[in-house]
Amino acid sequence: MNTRRDIATMLTTTFVTWLGQRTTAVALPLVALSETGSAWTTGLVGGAVGLPMLTSAWWARGLRQRLTTGRALAGVLAVQVLGLLVIPVGAAVGTVGPPHLAAAGLITGAATTLSGPGQRALLADLCADPGVATRMLAWQDFAHRSTMILAPPLAGWAVTAGGPLRLLWAEAAGVTLGAALLLAVRGSAAPAAEGATGAPALRHVLARHPEVRRAVTMAGVGGLTWFAFTLGLAILGAETGRPGLLVSAGMTGYGAGSLAGALIAPALVPRLPPLGTMAAGWILLGVTFVALPAVTASLPLIAVVAAVGGLAMPLGIGAVNRLITTRTEGAERRAAFAVESLVHDGAVSIGLLGGGAVIGLAGAGPTLVVAGAAQVAVGLLAGPWLLPPPERTTAAAAASDRPVRERVAG
Image (tube, rainbow, N blue to C red; front, side, top):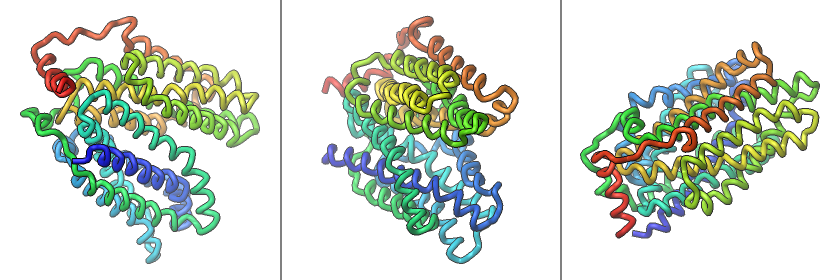
């Protein structure tokens, strides 16, 4: 079995599928608006995508434990392709309406809910050594983040040259290519990782691993307050007579900073204490939120401040991946990646859903300050400084760590 080839294939799959998804983020609202003539339908797919993810603790518990091979994950991507084809096929025959948009969102949402955590868990299993797994997961995050820079200008050019509908076909083709790549992955989850744990409930995984629980808590608060950055800067720009400029500067700076952070994460994350690294990342991002209202007069300063926060995020994400990889294995590892994704992404969806109303009541500037203070507070409380993580001295904890130590020693 060629492990290096399998790892390279999975990293390539991440890049290809995310490039397609980010380019489509530009095209999909345009297609929905042109086909239905109703502005409210432009957000219907995004709302429908979130429903399977928010309910995945119930319906996906058993399914995620079957995703132990490249072939199984390729099947999930094939389902995602079917969801992606609903809108372009409907547009080709002239029958796109709210039911088609909702169906596309539900199908693709269910597929992405399974595929993201499943790919991270399989990649960690293929690496075997937790240190190698940490670095490869950091490179996977880099492949993901690089599409933030590449996809928007590519999508803008493609929409101008050929219209938005072609981009939807292109995304389906890209995810199909990703599925074909995963079929070439021959490795699978190690048989030793498939113990008698079955399909553990997500809450049980968090209860057994307090450091993972702390990391997931920080990710959840960060996701919940993310709306303050995106919506807050957009509204501040409109209020100061510069619509679109503030959020563009902030997102550009954040994207550049996060890409730089993703480049150094594979080297730094294995050498840094994971819980402290993640807590420091969220604290730094919170400080940037607090500082942003004070620098809105200067677009370059907004970009620089946002870049500082973006730089910290890949290190924090790499740290939680390291915690999950070193503290869990097999069924628990797949559940841990799933619960981290559920809590963070679900919190982002909830925050965006209610964020406009919060900003309307409190104002964009105060919302940014409070959101930043919340991230600083959770980083201080959940980090290893004020309340050290409990010692893992129980027999069950020792037993759960033993296979990992033996695998590294071997």
